[in-house]
Amino acid sequence: MTDFRVYAGLFFAALAAATILPMQSEAVLAGLLVLDSHPVWFLVTVASTGNVLGSVINWGLGRGIERFRNRKWFPANARTLERATLWYRRYGKWSLLLSWLPVVGDPLTVVAGVLREPFGMFLLLVTIAKVTRYLVLTAITLSWM
Image 1 (cartoon, helix red, strand yellow):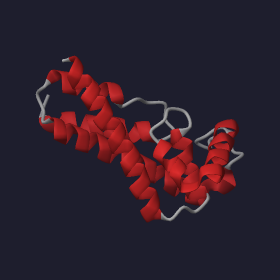
Image 2: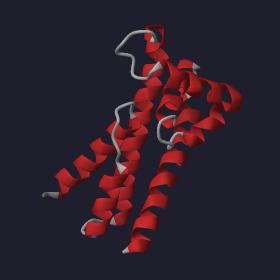
Image 3: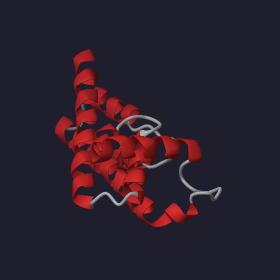
Image 4: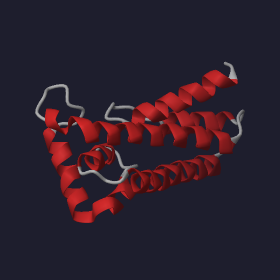
């Protein structure tokens, strides 16, 4: 497999995992780390970039499609979105530091768009959360090798 395909696969797995799609990028990153055939720093950078971009897509969707909330195709079910909204209203922008969490993390990024969180602060907090998650995963994976 060429390096481009490896990095593109990791990028798109991380991007898709950050959207409402039910995907996991951690296994892809861990598998590539175990192979020990690519620079660790670059794998973490690619995964983080894809994951943050996926969250940016969610934020953008939240900015524009809240009016479609009750439609069948809306990317979050009502219960999950309501739970994320309650967290966001209670903890504000700081709840974005939990955007790495399964189930509620991705809807939080949609809610940030719905509630008009300024993009710069959104990007900063989500980047901190996503990069930290991949760094912790990397440290754990490499300590088992």
